[in-house]
Length: 127
Image 1 (cartoon, helix red, strand yellow):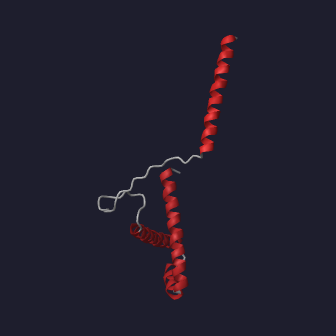
Image 2 (tube, rainbow, N blue to C red):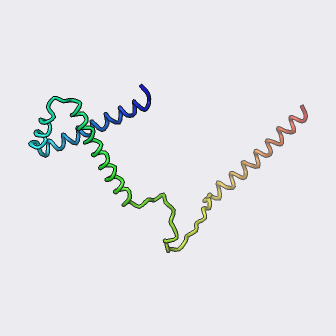
Image 3 (tube, rainbow, N blue to C red):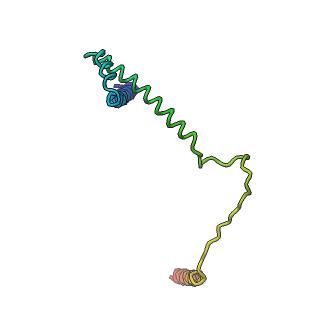
């Protein structure tokens, strides 16, 4: 089985399942109408599968349109503000907040490390 055949089979299976689900919901809402429609199909499994696939394709299309319409109504926070915005521009600068005692300890440790490094270099030179 080729990848295209597999994806088409999976898509058909998805649509048949979606169509069966939509038909089940319709059957619950209006059992008499659904009973008449399915009784005309009889035992023809191929025709029933085609009907369910068509129903699933239609349901899938309607769901996509519904989701797209919902998404188009929502503001997109990821788009940059265009020239149509007329508010003031606020520029902020982040500055680190450091406790003075921590800063002095860090400087003292840095000096100690520098002295230790010098001693190591001196020991290497004498070896």
